[in-house]
Image (cartoon, rainbow, N blue to C red):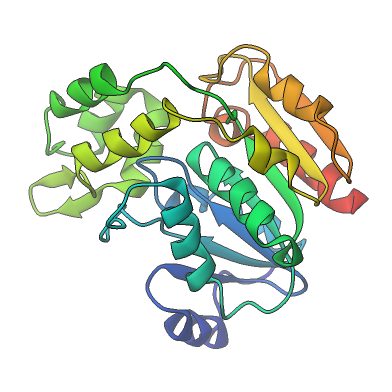
Length: 265
């Protein structure tokens, strides 16, 4: 296994700016995109084995520890991502969870020359008619700040607690949200007003779709994505026992699926 971070890698990170993080490794670039309310750190348990397949980068989306775009549209988030990726010249493998999966395929549709392959985890193109109002109200009722790790685990359970501990801002008095609930609500609300089928159909790169057994996506949509006519092959895998956080719920199955896909490219 490669060392976690060399001095040269840390220097490259500084040059890339605060939102795009150079995680080390050699070879073709691999970009990891987190989900809503997440952060680049949510990938830290997977970065070591991914370094064996390429040069790994993680990214903190706008609205997550930094200002959100003036207009909370998917296109604005993708434009922000594209600008941050300017230092990476080679076509990359883009691996995205949930919101990161959506941003990944919309980025691939808008910039086909910059993406050589795509992994989408538990995200679908059409949530029209759904609202995030109740979800946002629930978040607003959380007992923040959370005192410590034990408080987080007791409240969320071990898997989700780890995701949020990797994401929230740790201060002297505990874990604070690293963004604004109305912003996160409105990001999700946009998905209830439109669909992203045309962007998916425009993706030219080969793709792997991973859906958890206890998915948050509308039934059947990820399987339908695999049947959408495209220039390149699409693989679909259903992961038994996994919830929305497939990569943390079933890390071994997730790793095998992704590694098999990367080795097939």
